[in-house]
Image (cartoon, rainbow, N blue to C red):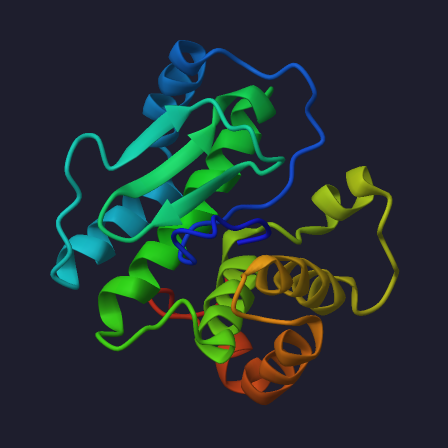
Amino acid sequence: MEADSDANPSSGGYYSAANDGRTVEECQDMIQRSLRTPMVKFLREHLEKSGCSIRDNFIKAIHCDQKISGGYFRGEGIMVCSNHMTLQDEVNQVVIHELIHAYDDCRAANLDWANCAHHACSEIRAGHLSGDCHYKRELLRGSLKIRGHEQECVRRRAMKSVTANPYCSESAAKDAMEAVWDVCYNDTKPFDRAP
């Protein structure tokens, strides 16, 4: 959740470098391809097992005015910002990242997106488990270090998201991240270990 809607703090997504992007229709086709990938199938299956049904239009492409890639909106589903997508891999990453937020929302009955610690925990998990911080992605961002790049990337991206939450100041976001880091980084559900 690197950018957030004031109306719904459970929205978000990570920033994309794309400028032109795709049409909503092209992006919707890319989402359909994404639904056939093993990771997306796995996450959707575990959402269903957790009691959260995924309707056909749960993941949809939209045109976004904000500079975000997408977001999860409680009660509405996942939005992918077509105008910030260029590659299939980008769409896959947004869908996976946001499905982890949806899974967290499903399994935690008391998840409060306005609570900085709750938000930080889900961002840490989504960053760590989605592959957002894989060394190849970091290399393309120009942020690769030899040691510790993955945790540093997860921290950087989660901080960006939590500070975009209108309920979380930068210091509150930092405190929340530090308070929940160990527990949330090591929580790999629904995976046996981090993919």
